[in-house]
Length: 238
Image (cartoon, rainbow, N blue to C red):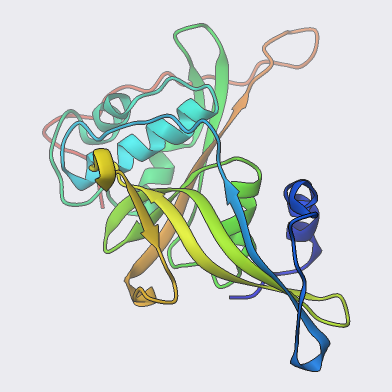
């Protein structure tokens, strides 16, 4: 996996600076320098268990955790009611396109705040490590599918390589995942790209929230949508 360029390097600067006294540069052939064992961890990630061991609830629990991290109290039951019409146990959450269609929009929260939610996804595992590391560096957990199961990514370790030209490559050595089904020692799962089968990885999914300023003196209010549950007899998944 390759790092796309300087954006990640700039984003990682505070982390690396905090550890710069501990970092040892290793010289490799062709004057390539290695900065080993770099890491990042998302702090204070809400601990959300799936209320049912069903893949649609695993997805909904992970989404709840990502939103609660952003201060948005829309829990897994809100999403299962809205998308599937109730507490149906399904082997899949549905397609990313369908989930995005259900999520994207404006919401009014119980405390009166107006927020806009937008889902972002990639159907396959990213080829560039910035797509995996940048959200973590910015303290944003995200969903990663492994063996058709939705995990929450909260940390990573990697080795950085610096070429004489200044170009950087990154080799991810570990991803720290939270299993929405797991409890105790089974809660945290480590994915090692050097040992695991990369073909078992699926896509990534993330939901980002933005508070809408409803002060009429600052900006016109955007049309708001109060989501309603779908028909329980016709869950809209594809």
